[in-house]
Amino acid sequence: MGGALAVTGDNMIQRQIGDQAATRLFGTTDAIERLKLGPIQRNFFSFCFQLDSIDKSDHRKLFVKIPKTDLRRREATILPLSDQDKALAHEEVKSLRLLADHWDGKSDNVEWIKVVDFLEELNAIITERVDAVDAFSIFRSLDFRSRLGNCIQGNRLAGYMGRLGSALGRFHLQRYKTATVSSPIIFPKIYFYCRELSRQTRNPCLMKVPAALTKLEKLSFQTAETETFKGLDIRNVLIRGDNLFLLDPGKMKRSFREADLARFIMTYRILYWGSPLLLLLGTPGDNAENSFVRGYSSHFPDMDSKLLDLYVLKEQLKHWHTALDSLSQKAWSPLVKSIAARVYVNQFYERQILQQMRKF
Image 1 (cartoon, one colour):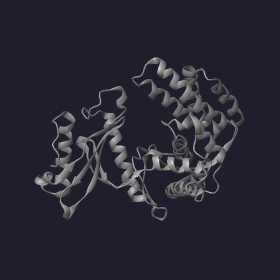
Image 2 (image 1 turned 90 degrees about the vertical axis):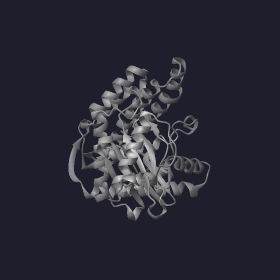
Image 3 (image 1 turned 45 degrees about the vertical axis):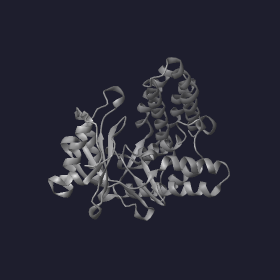
Image 4 (image 1 turned 60 degrees about the vertical axis):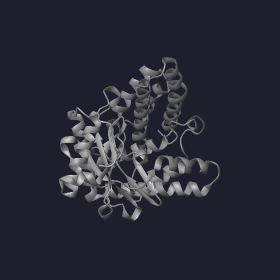
């Protein structure tokens, strides 16, 4: 097995995963000698590493992911595996297998990463690995250059986003049924986030949300109930040339199409998150976002923008709440966290909420 590893608990689990993967994929117990394991990487919701076969006659590039629930609040180790950890992995594998059968993104050059195997007892999902880069940084660069007057780069970004919207719409079209929804169905979640954020920030813009929504209380909309997935996020998009690859779909559930659209739109709007440019530019330009919605609407021309606006508002409030929660977990001084919340987080989302409410 390529590369010497210091023996730790996580390294031992990694070796077990490599051993089982080699046996299952190559069919021989000594195949582990033909594999190279990459370093373990950790984020708040998973452990990951690359897995490569050394044999040139059967060279395979794979990726291993071990889903975990929020590691910010507990010891960051692979073991023990909680029931919630196992549920995350099972749901993701279920989603990837469904997408392998029903996602048709070839005409848009938008594909999901393919699942290869699932080592259930170790909670390890093995997928194909593509040589690609995160679209997040590429999209940020394209948007920034378009702001400087480079229309070619702006059109390129709009093209990517339009194809993502079209591929999502084509998938939803396969598995939908018409539904009627009244506005108040989403109000409880909006009110919940408003209460929580008001308690934390005392921001006056949050007091305006319930009043703005009263105008929509008696409205109902025709929509589509379909398969939606929690992991639809611009940070889960890879790019290689003209090809886009999606990963980490998370759990799928039946919901309204606007839930998926709003999730993705909101992750696009925080394209400059973590950069000083957020204070200067705020959100990226509208052209690419509009292209995403147009691409999707080419499959659902009857879509009502007002219902989507409501779901976007809910996602904005949710992201604001999550951003403050993440900030509270950082090992910074209370003063630094207070300044970051006031100047960076709250200021950004206040502008977002006020702008969104003008649509109602």
